[in-house]
Image 1 (tube, rainbow, N blue to C red):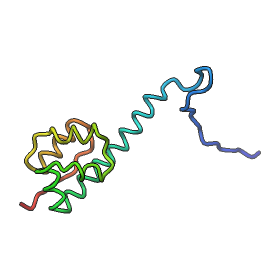
Image 2: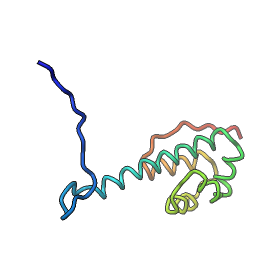
Image 3: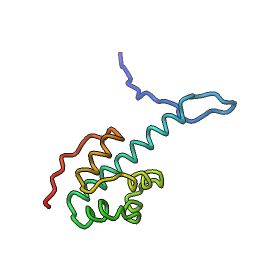
Image 4: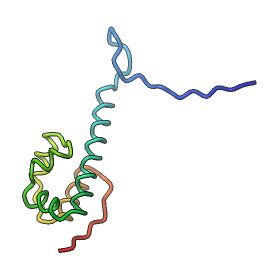
Length: 109
């Protein structure tokens, strides 16, 4: 007897006449927040490796830099309001607000 394994599929798009997965909006909001978290992780990783990027992020909150990582306007605005003087302080504030996994940061200066 042969057994077939199928991958489960979830319908997250609304169907005609309002039928389908009722939590589609919450699901997509969650997925978008995961993508935004990944972008913040990438930004912080580059800032950790590149002192110029770190300075542009911490001291200048360079919107061009933030936009180049594909961050939303809301996230860019929020990052500019964080009162941090070092990359470590900025990372701590991001972790406490977003629940992202903390990255161990050490600063050369």
